Length: 111
Length: 118
Image 1 (cartoon, helix red, strand yellow):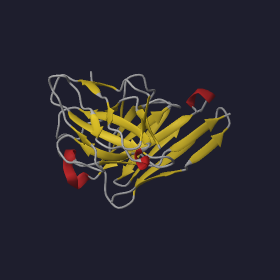
Image 2 (spheres, helix red, strand yellow; image 1 turned 180 degrees about the horizontal axis):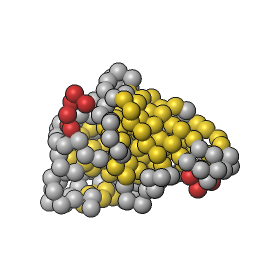
Image 3 (spheres, chains in turn purple, brown; image 1 turned 120 degrees about the vertical axis):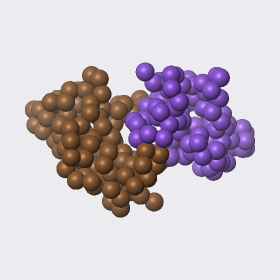
């Protein structure tokens, strides 16, 4: 079975402070990991995926297979980063398989 | 970018009635769509995978006779909540992937449909 764990429901940081949203997963095969973001009153949208190895809006995430983690990081938080963030896993990378979501972490960036 | 549209955005119905929610891919074709359910302050739970031209695949614990899914065309999947009861009140979200991108394409989400059963 595949499982995604996001231990923090809420993360509150000051503007300019570093951000790390934690995500751990459980899957026996070769998973594909994603981070999705949902801004207030908007639909869920893809932020980044581990196979792309890119930085989106200053966010990066590295897949650590040894620790089964895919933490989302940003060195300097901005107010517009305030949103709900979901870590998700798709089994068997490259196939049209379903996504399993974590419970989400609300990031609150304050002045 | 690709857009997935859901209709209605919100619906209120009486207990015992059936409600249909539509999910459309507006500018791409999707052989597979996914239906999720989200309770307040909780994560998205996959209910079923909708397959164009064939039966949907339901997740464990989801009643297929309760939540009827039809994927009659490459751009439309419908979820019908039959004989709805207050416990069916929830936020239902669909997602779809462009068929031409294969299994690795980005998954696009609808805006969600909030169902309230009185």
